[in-house]
Image (cartoon, rainbow, N blue to C red; front, side, top):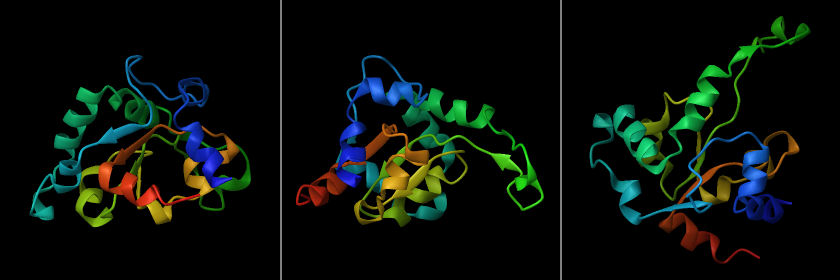
Length: 148
């Protein structure tokens, strides 16, 4: 199931069917170079605005805005049980070293940062709908090459 959900991230039609918004010229999934994981040597100086600029250049920041404006109050008793708001899922960022990249994404709604080993079917296809918009670093892609 995980491999099927992973292959769905490469099909534009499936990604658009989930509601993700991105530039039409993009090839999916988005593969980032190795420097992506080493944006700052000091993680304390990590700023979300730098990542927003990178995502805007790539043409996927529109999807993060969709998640920000799509937050709404849940219907039913879930509100009383601590699940008051529902936020749409946005980007899935797959990197080798999560601690080096997570501070850049921590304030962006709907964005998840995982390692290749942390990729589950639920992360790749939230709610059972395959085709999540995914950014993968080269190091993480090399680690995933051995999967079958």
